Image 1 (tube, rainbow, N blue to C red):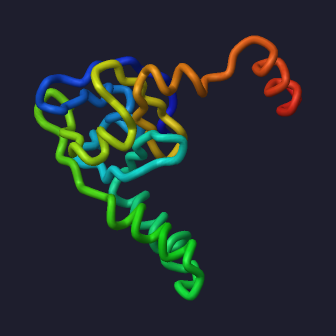
Image 2: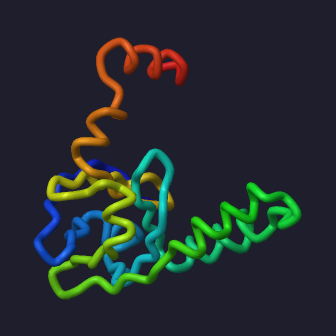
Length: 145
């Protein structure tokens, strides 16, 4: 399972390191060496293990009726915008320029592990979305904590 918040930086070649804890999130013997990345919500980039991506596409995306224009747009954005990324020896992926532009990532990056996917954010934009103070109290109350 992916979890945690990490703060790497984007290098001049558009590469970002995926933290080792995320690469080993599914067991010590199964280091992740490839991710599928695509447009995410709220201006982030989503990253999936290959098998989780296949499951998402098969069970949630292609089952949507293509007669609905909004479903066709979901296919275009998510599948059309997807790309496979090999992790190099330092655990970095190269993010294509169209996804960097979409997510407005320039240097500071926030990576979140979210169970079966990873979100990659611009540090600045994530700072605007991240709850704090009273909204955290409301969130905790909603969850019965």
